[in-house]
Length: 378
Ligand SMILES: Cc1ncc(COP(=O)(O)O)c(C=O)c1O
Image 1 (cartoon, protein in one colour):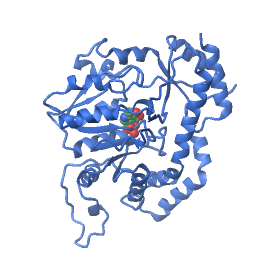
Image 2: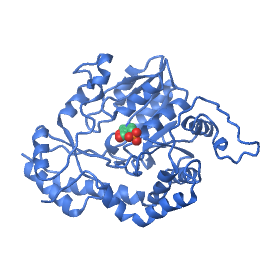
Image 3: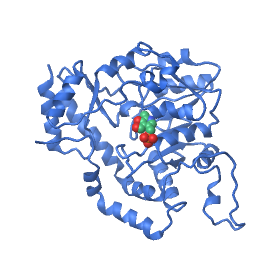
Image 4: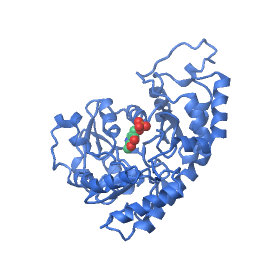
């Protein structure tokens, strides 16, 4: 039987083995496993790839969100507006810096923060808006940034699912005061472990980000090249949530292929659209002017659970990204949001499911998936 996994990291490694092995050997033979040249080199290469002035790496997308907020001075007493249908990190990072997350519901088509609901959620304590580009489709950044500007709020993009997405030719990640990406293995640019990055155009914020990610010191203090002897100098109470040299070297090896990875996801999505366009399933939208980077290919079906079971029987992996939503998770019961609090999010949570769309998906696997989904449509 043909099996269709969500990802195939081993196949991915084999395809880029030469470059990856060279990167790994370079780091191991140099013997500089910490505070070496790979991290800053990757940061400049990534910033250039995206078109941002500064990129500061972290050891996860979650850490990137925390570092972004700490560097912008967000903490206890502050509120940050985000969505309840995301990965828990979008919300937990807000709480981990001591601020309060305020959820607003999402648009029914893109599943992204609904700008029409935003102003009602703003209070005198609001410090930032943190939209999440769900599944790879950009949130309505023109509308959201206008509201942020009018109210003097920071815009922090959670772009962990959306590397490669854009609106009117301007990449996601370039709209916010700070924007976060994840390099978890299954993301567009996956490390062989965890990783993340926060980007900004503000040099002072970037320096704070480097400090918050690395023990609260300027980086030079760690490079042991300081002629005065490299005494410690902790300027802020920082974290130790940095990317390591090995991951940075492997990511450098993959970065030249990032456009291929994104193209490949978009190509799968295009084939799905042309194959499934007339079926009873609801397919993901791509709004005019937007580029969706398809970290997840999310469909909706009223009989979602039956469909998933049938696909599993045919050897096909599916997912239900971020279901149940955050306000219905045990950890957030005490916040007092019950069922009915976010109707659009909750309705989608009953119906959505994702199918494989990773670059490693072969045409044989994709054809199998396409046929099986067609056979299940009413
Ligand atoms: C929307 C979103 N934000 C943040 C994160 C956290 O990223 P990481 O797993 O690298 O910590 C994820 C991870 O999937 C995510 O999907």
